[in-house]
Length: 283
Image 1 (cartoon, rainbow, N blue to C red):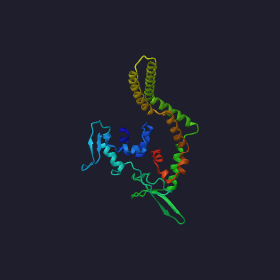
Image 2: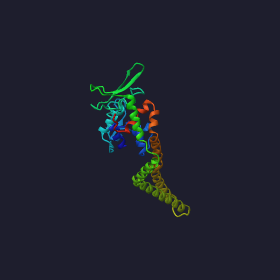
Image 3: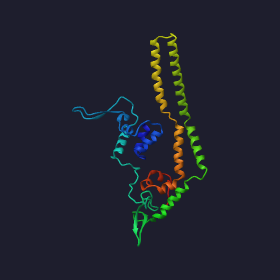
Image 4: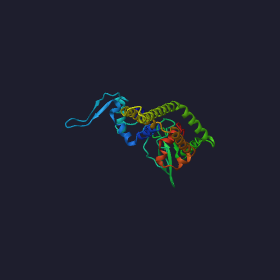
């Protein structure tokens, strides 16, 4: 959860995006429980005391070690409640389908964000991206939109490259998760040993080699440890299968990048995904 609070404090991703990333990293938490968790002051070393009779509700310092600092926790509360402006917040969608890049282009002269508007001609409207300052920079929207789509097409891998990319990513992922796999195998081995110990204790009980009281003691100890190990093993989901499925979705989307953009709604075109791809787009 420390990573969650740090990401939320940065403000680069909204709460749902951080939750989804955390789930991919192994967090076992529903969206509703996630919202409750990030509001819980226990993570900054404090405990919430609800209102009681004449005593007002308050947060008091707990005896446990905090995961994040109170300042980070309070910053996250301000950001998710809207009391503090997110510096990475995307522009509002205020343009029509003819100006999908409005609010994402910068002026080539003064580096200000370009606006966009329509100019009425004799028979129809003509759309332009233009600077709102006095520098006078403006571009035909059709030309800019077409250039952006051409740049998207340049990102589409050539035929036969998809499998190469997939194999490279999976190979790198396996290399980076060797330690995690070693830890998982260690838990499995310990679980097998405890189950074997419990089976041997049952055999000894049946053969009259140990008393019932001794067996119950062994059973209680083993059962408790088995439950602990199974909880830990649940965190080790089939990561390779998950990353493989996720990778296939990403590569399929990349293969049809331009088509997805053209067929998308204005809201979809304004989504983070498109504008994170070409980090530098020159008009």
